[in-house]
Image (cartoon, rainbow, N blue to C red; front, side, top):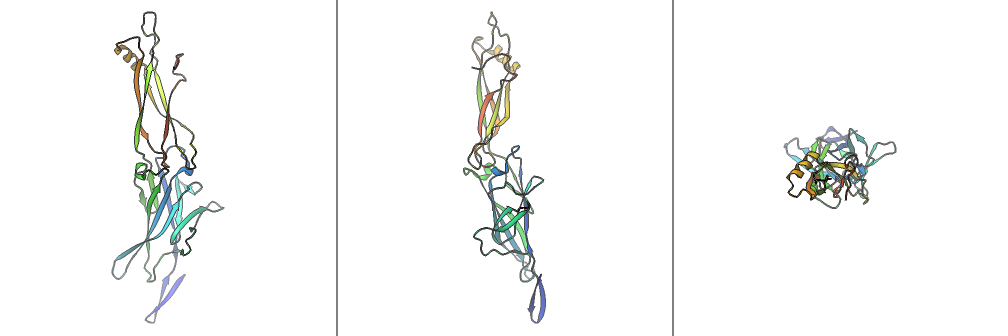
Length: 272
């Protein structure tokens, strides 16, 4: 469609097309099988810019917004979630019955207008998509959980990289001795680390098992036994799990548990 403008008795046709900004969100380096329902809320702002053809000056305006609170169910292609902005003011995205993306003005945005492609002078608008904020469960700053977003046109990438810490466990090991108080075996010891987080609905997630393992090898046990001053006292060693994420992708804290691996490791010995 065109809008015909008459100026100084000279008719001029101005195109009146509208545009829809179709974006993609790619969450990178996420834990395996992390559910979309537990991704955090993200706010986007669309900036409309126009360059005056006469003066060359550019004017930019925040023209539209979009908040996605629940990513579950949105169309996904090659790991990227699809979303869009089609109206001035606040937008909302849902999924239509046929599975396609549906874009509407958000409730309360009664003055919404379709995004124009041209201004009244026929100059073409340009649109820039910005990620305004990531809102995390329990309120940690998003910089403690994610890298700064990388935006390529309308593809927004967020890399998960939580601040990290470490956990240690102390193991006391009593070696089996012969009648002369000499060790008859040097059993290896292994610990496994599991983790879970609080989901967006407030319930705990399933345990993710064996995120890491640490091992006190048989050779190391034998060396510790040789170095021990008291050959009859239990050996002891501190084993450490390193580079542990502090926050889950939704901002809740990871809960960790340490357990000693018993299957195929104890060789008839007991844990006390």
